[in-house]
Image 1 (cartoon, rainbow over the protein chains, first blue to last red):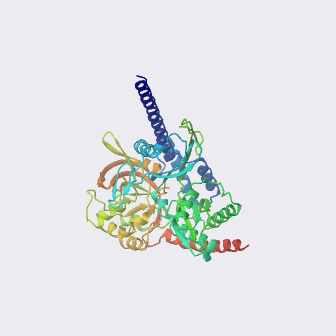
Image 2: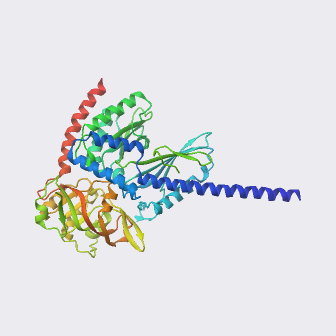
Length: 317
Length: 199
């Protein structure tokens, strides 16, 4: 008798837990879908501030006409509730998840569902083409898409979620290479400048430039992506690297590519560098580009799913 | 005063245009991207609409269905260079006079622009809502099997622009000229940076 009661009690506790989990999952999924929708339609504050600064620094007529169109477009995107750019990208998530965050085991399924909802609601363009089959899935879901990158935070019950919508245009020019160490930093900066002038001008400048330094092609590429997602105006914690960010930004701005590569006063929104130690015999460097419509959003969730949006002032989920 | 081109565009309408000029478009505009160009040029599939004197937009819009009809939500230009391989044949097969996209195109297209009296122009990239607002009506959508971005959309547009001429019928190529300038500035700027690194 006692045993039966205990079993029933345990089952009902389990059921309550499961029901609570379902409620949490649904609430989290809806919030993420809402946030993707915001990121598609509204630029983060730091990018907006820098674009306005670039507009006010601009003197070329043709470039000023492009900035006018850019700001008119940003206003219309909000007033008509539409994505800023038709290319809403392959949805990418960069997740810093506490090992005690209650939905850690369900993150992937929730994020996939959120993309499905946002695709319908925003609406987002269908951008997942299955490779080899060469067929657009029509849902923005595909093998490995949305892309999710995880960082685990031990002993934390929070989640910091970065949503990034990068169009194909600014994904096309990204490059990674491994140089002979003798080529050194001169070789690396030449690689960045060459890539910008050869391929970057078609990628909707002014561009956000993320540069990564590591021991191989893949580590450098990963760091370049991370660098491109750092906030505009922030600096690498290493003073020497921070100094190089400023110098490289100034050097690239002197090329004066202007908005849309039509010529102007400056070239880039920012240069951010991320680095790690390298192998003595290899010198990996990569460059990742973000277009002027740098649709990046960061939101922090607590264990009870209360949240604060870190990139878009005034936005709550 | 705004310079406005209307479809069907004639040779004399585009022959006087020079790189850097700003124009707008009234009339018929169709979208065609990578797989659409391949379908027309390699597979020989002919869309229903007559493109003689028409304008093609390198663009893959967001569309949504409202009351059983498709509507354009956002439509900005895509990188024109991706269509370099097939653009010469595309313009010769279709008779388009105006190619609109983003960034430059190569030598093959530039030569073909001279031979066929065609111009290439750029629409400011990422300005997809402004552009959608200049679309009066989505008239037809073909090749929907290619997926939302790659389908062939037929639109009527009003004062569509600004369109900045980047290849003219004289063979001037704005982006190639810019690239040369940017490369010269790059060499000077890097030399300065290297000197700074040695300090």
